[in-house]
Figure 1 (cartoon, rainbow, N blue to C red):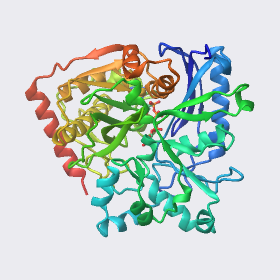
Figure 2 (tube, helix red, strand yellow):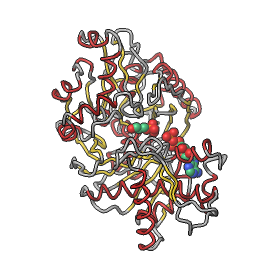
Figure 3 (spheres, rainbow, N blue to C red):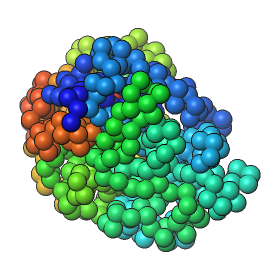
Length: 495
Ligand SMILES: Nc1ncnc2c1ncn2[C@@H]1O[C@H](COP(=O)(O)OP(=O)(O)O)[C@@H](O)[C@H]1O
Ligand SMILES: O=P(O)(O)OC[C@H](O)CO
């Protein structure tokens, strides 16, 4: 057996590609990152060039190896984590993509989704996939490509093409076109996968008009996915972990017990609550998803997705220009007049869970002559906290057990003021881990599980350390009256 103990993670996200090296105690040793160009060919359309993604991925892996001063032969295993749902179709012979990747945020297939909902298909789709019919997921993106790229359907039917989410595309390229596979967490976001039977679903393939020949094999999140082509990094590296980024963060946050919840605050916010072996069907418009599938055992989660979190702070900086850096919001919020009841509802592109209101638009309520940048900044941070409470309330209404501590990560959690307000508004303690890169850590941990660097989820949980705990301090009366104000503000922006 090899003596290599370091772990490599590729984190291919919406706005950047990163690679990180971790030691066998989950401590970061080196990393590299490259920003990813975004393409907006029409209003509501978002695309990525997969050749950018491929070139950057290879580049950041080389950069991370060099920054950590390790060689490919020192790496015990590689884990891949990725922006989810983003759809790629490529030619099996040449490996060339037939079109740019259609990104999860892309709304071009919304008319098809509306039609399918009108025709009454949503209950069946939700029962099998845990998802609500929305252009967010891969199925209608594939359908759009097959309909709109000339000759594609015929080529797909002849078995010449392969579909994959970004993990799957990278796996194909990294293995030199040898492996066409994904993991159960990514399959669960396509809207073609039965999360209960853990299998592609014939009826869904028919409903969306997707030929089965396009689909990858689906493996555990810790599995033998193959090895990187020896020519890429100087020696083959075993690929032993794959998970979608929010699920990888759930693993990186060691949320292994039912009832544990993590929330990631980056551009958007994605909260996942582990529900154990129980695939709870949400009656409150949350998603049911695969948290991870380890050693053949599937663990499920309820997921709430908020599309605008840190993006609202970017709006304060780039749109309103009342701050010059995101970090300034902390000082401003501290200095704000707390007696002003200002509510910012950042529904810039509609509202995500649990409202799923694509037509709602943002608003600011409660302005007076005394309102200034500090009060607006404070209300913007508060909005993220209120939206998290919306998700938590929906999860509780769905029968998820009472939450004791929320584990948080993502760029926004550098803001101590926000985390205190989050604890206050939720009435739940909030904890931030030492390793901020929980998504990459989760992918590395899955690979570490398979390679034997970590002994079971308990081994991963032992390495998790808190770097700050925020206890609720607000009175119950104040919490409820502030939250009632938020609900009223949301009601006023709903379409
Ligand atoms: N101190 C801070 N306070 C509030 N928001 C912050 C702070 N630092 C960063 N952010 C916000 O966090 C986001 C970046 O987080 P990150 O996890 O890197 O996002 P992503 O992975 O989605 O690109 C940005 O939207 C930024 O505005
Ligand atoms: O790439 P991120 O971090 O913005 O995450 C995107 C999510 O996976 C979309 O579902």
